[in-house]
Image 1: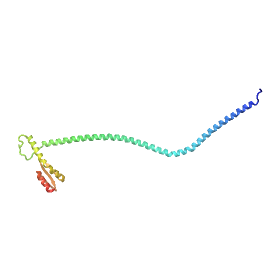
Image 2: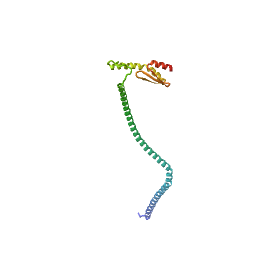
Image 3: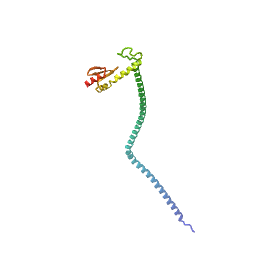
Image 4: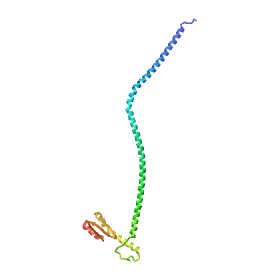
Length: 202
């Protein structure tokens, strides 16, 4: 079979078309890439300022919120520190108050004890003849104390009535009632006399 002289031309033609298609595809791709890049740049250039302008107030607000939160955090830390410090101080003060109260009570007890001892040591009975104790001063004083206590107990009711009327009075040893009323000072050796005076004036 004889060779076809047109085959080389057709072959070159196909190669040429293929090259043109490849070149066109490459140009299209490159052009597309350039256009996309330029479009993105244009969009970014146009949109970014608007977005930044829109977000500026929000950014400022967020900065303010962040600053406020940080300040509140510092205040809370300071508060916690001060609270612990105050708590320690309160505990120390409570301990001091308790100690001082205990010491004060001890001093009061000692004072009362010393006063009682002083009164026992300095006891002087007026109006009793000498040697009435008959050699037994302890027994004598015991009986004497009971007698005085009974006499003083008789004044309890009149003392209560005088207190209700806001009348100043004092029951002095052994059993004598002193009172002040309307600028006058009165003395009663018996509760009967005191009650009669009270009934007359109230």
